[in-house]
View 1 (tube, helix red, strand yellow):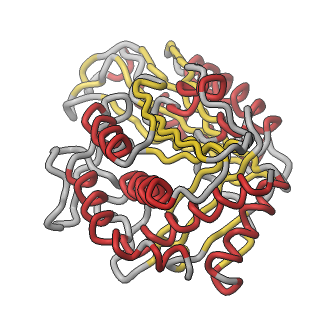
View 2 (cartoon, rainbow, N blue to C red):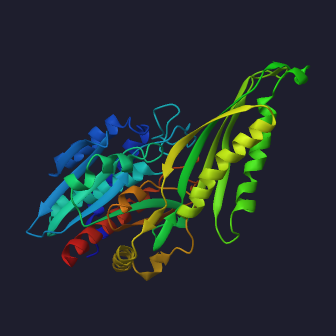
View 3 (spheres, rainbow, N blue to C red):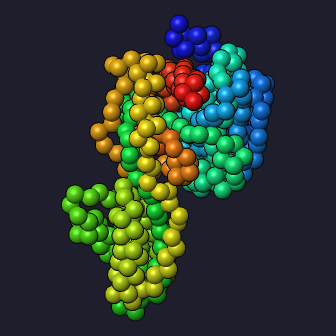
Length: 388
């Protein structure tokens, strides 16, 4: 019998767990209730539980038999500062916060995995489940690694998964090598001389300087990168002024940069501040720039990706397994874990009639893939431990 069929009895419980998490979203490093909920469930099912890893992270550990091999599987559980617009019965009860990326679903999938493995116990070795905070903002994976994750919970490989609402429901996608781009960011404050809108000649207008900077930054990719390379530069925030008849003293911008190689990332990190400062200087404006630490490129280990794909072929069949033809320009802090351990990050299709893009206020995780994802993790963990 397929693992997913063996798990059908827990379907309603896992949907209820996922929707409970959706109702109670918490931002990165503030996931105290979420952490407590996850820890209590793991303990109830017989897992050894460690809390406070990387501040609010939780690790569940279960060992069986005499096998010396160990595997780590990760799910993230932080939410986003977005006002929900789904109008669902289980919508967020916290104004301004919602699970708009499916981390509630990722956590429910791994909890279903935990329950089934505890109930069956049919594996030989050690399984560590990493419930990670702050994927969306503070690099919770890095915080967990720096908190001694792999020294305290040694494992031979680590795996992670993300739902994708633009990929057909229940389809697994794999890619060796680069899967997600790096992300770097810059906070910029432009300081000029404010004044009355009727006398701009006695001011130094940070809005005009900011507008010129926004346009100049758009030339970095087209005029600095090899046409065969890829990069993205986006100004996501431009804030200044409060009145139409006043030129403000300051303006603020935030800049987001993405790349698939360290070389392109290094170039953009060098050129973005240069362009900002020189553009600002040409308007007599002072530019103060602070760099936000981003996430490195996510690179999947070839051997572990081949192994992960084979498990999917065995679990769901060839018709529901694809090779991804391109990398994603989004970023993913699981890259920090893959810098320390061999492993692979994969995607699971979640498309249905109500699908909205990730980070959309109308997004909701597709509960139909909960057991599909959990059964895959169960099969992968068992096979990995047996392979040793």
